[in-house]
Length: 166
View 1: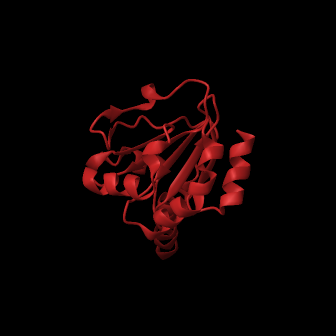
View 2: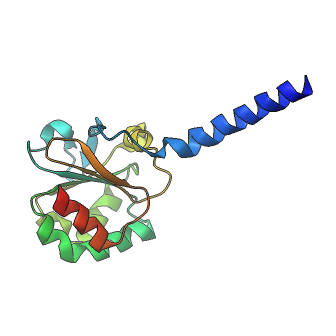
View 3: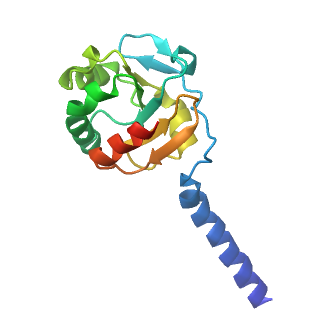
């Protein structure tokens, strides 16, 4: 009886651990999440607004996150090379002012391929990707199929090499 109880407890522990860490990987055929974000212009944006046959980079971030800001500092010189990639930056912070400041500080408004918005407290995108830390980056090819997901900030040359493949 003690042996069976130990096995049940061990199995429960494995399920608990796997539920929080194993869920990090997404199936290769995962599509773009059905987000509904409020942009810095106070307009709602969904995957239906994306242009067809163009790759997409989804960045889940927080405007006050040091890693997210560092990513943008490093990525900014490469943004002209990503002009054919639709970049959707999503956060859960409901404060549009914080997003507007982030957009201003990194001069992102001049890049028409970048959309920044908040999903508010729905956490749909956060749950879809099982985001534990920010920034989280998901890259989709022009067919809307997941090519690569980064739950930790990749080196910019690695990220750019992935983008060349899509």
